[in-house]
Amino acid sequence: NGTSTGLTGETYASDIQLTEGQNTITAMATDAAGNTNTATITVTLDTTLLAITSTTPVDNDTGIPVNTTLTATFREEIDASTITTTNFTLNSETSGTVSGSVTYNNRIATFTPSDNLSYNTTYTVTIKPGNNGVKDLAGNSLTEDYVWSFTTESGLEITIIEPQDGETINKAYAMVKGTIKTATNDIGIKVNGTIAEINGENWAASNIPLTSGDNTITAEAVDANGNTAQEDITIHTDT
Image (cartoon, rainbow, N blue to C red; front, top):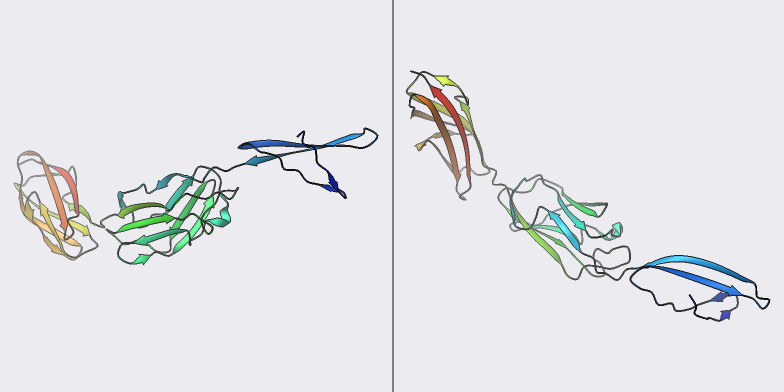
């Protein structure tokens, strides 16, 4: 690149200033008779610190399925050997470190928990920088810990199984039945304001008043943590 350098035996060395990005280096040798030969290579200078552009779940997201996987998308390709369960970690607010595995493909690192996560629990994800942290292909790392959090789904789900949505009946009152899925046994259910009786995963509310024509039946469940679930159906009364 125009800089003269001496020989030591059959080797030479020269300091060449590079600029950020792609650089072409050309070495030209000339002997005493004026004969020349050249060799050219291209190198890339990358001093830009590593960055994460997006994650799933996003920070402070709620209602995340307990069988979720976590991803972090990087601005550039990283050295896959540097992303591990040591520097890509998941922690529960209640039980500490969550075990799992880490994979990497096309700028996306994925953490897969070994088991389903707990319901209604806040988790914190951390990707670490530094000598033992994740690095790009040039060895650049993050400036600091990259941290985000999310909260899993409540595990509360209510279903009406009788009567069926769209059904027509000829009664002034209805018996409404259904099922409940919950992570806790401390729950309450109301159907159009009437308290339902709960028996395991089944519930029933009797004598729900109806009017002639279309009627909306709303089943609402609330657990001890304040989580709610609801299902609505419409039935038609023809008396």
